[in-house]
Image (cartoon, rainbow over all chains, first blue to last red; front, side):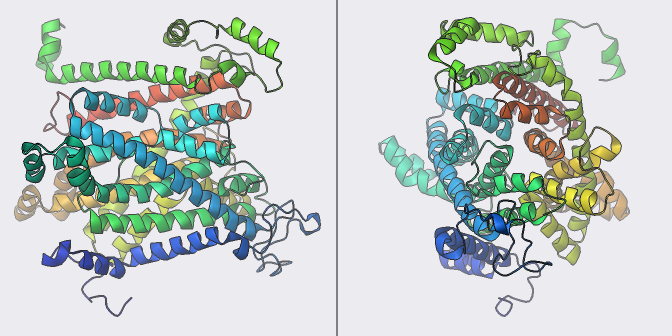
Length: 310
Length: 326
């Protein structure tokens, strides 16, 4: 890492734009030299592996209660053992195993939600941006209304009606959060549709659907990828918030949010019950944000620092 | 408004002639439209599962009880009639009675509005107190360790879920050090931890934004001129650079207030702070849908009003902005 970094770059940032900036190979190199990006990627790979191979990684069943082993501290504290690396909760469940399985829920909800949001948001954004006219106006007004209600408040309102559960949480967050994408995509389409090659394609009578597929979509994908990556971390936090409020994933399922909520009552005695799942949550979102930020710097420098949302 | 215009009588012609006022009236009218649309959304939400009666009644209610409830509440009437009822109720701030307490739902929410607003304002203030010096320092000492540290702090601030931050703060400052109370209240001591919890995310965002917009402004002609004139660095930055760099920050503040009101629900729950969010949390646990409805409407009303204020502030701050709209 340190060897091939030019000595002039102090903050691990990409070098100033040069001739080779657009080449995909130079982008890969930029990416590899970016400490934040590599750190983020490493964290995400570890969390993904943990989630995928949870049954092999976790030493215990995350819901198995062993009442004889209640409230064990982590191994570095008095009375802690390596049998339960991070200790056990008030029902004798292994905290480490629960965190490992929690990664599954967080990642699943994060990714599934973002997929729903992207499919709705990109479609709406493409239509609004390309067709313009009343469709566009209608969409922009809907987006205004959507943004008048804070994301989490709307999510809470929908979640109260749909009821808790993993799938309902995905549905709630997916339905509520698509506006961000639609706005980003629409803004991009508005500029792309006026480019010469699009005008040329239109002038020779290429059908609209084909123009959108061949010329517009490829140009919009970089932004969608960047926004989508950053959005995964926001959705993981949103899921954790809903679960924390008791509206998301329900116990005994080991969601990080509900684990923090359970551990909150025992802060004075077993502080690790709330702090450990929170640490996992924080590290995961940190990794995703680091990766997303550097992807934005490299792929799409013109995207602003942040779009509104959760 | 200058003194001359203030003395002239208020006529329709004058109102429509003043671009600032016309802009203000336009924005207010637009806010009203948005609120109407929000009321439609909130109303339609009830029908998301098809049957509001089943939603409100406990699952063990018999079909006959459900039917009686539907008739009693008027859920059997045509949907437009129901919406009209809902809207005319909403216009007079009447959403019906809480299903649990039997009190007027809107009154319950409005009684909690002041503490919630207080928390949001103190949090916003806290975020600015953290963000402005750090952002300024980071921009002035670009590339040094100060810049690095503040960047890392900003990143951590943006990645920490606020309920987790709240719990860690309680653990450190209330449980371990016993310096501050673990439960929030609208008093000076009771506000410290909730305000930091709620304000840190905004502080991180503002700091990053202020840094990048300052760096942009530093390259502008007027800053170079100010420096060339021999103005001290302090005057250059405070009078010339900061004023212009503040514009994007104010814009984002509108969005931040929106996000903050949403996150306040969770923060208030962590600290059992007596605001709207805590009320909503209790209502959720009790499946008290009427109170949740009133809460969403009040929340939207607060956000629309705050955004209106930011919009108007924004046009004052930057005369280059077209007053006719965004």
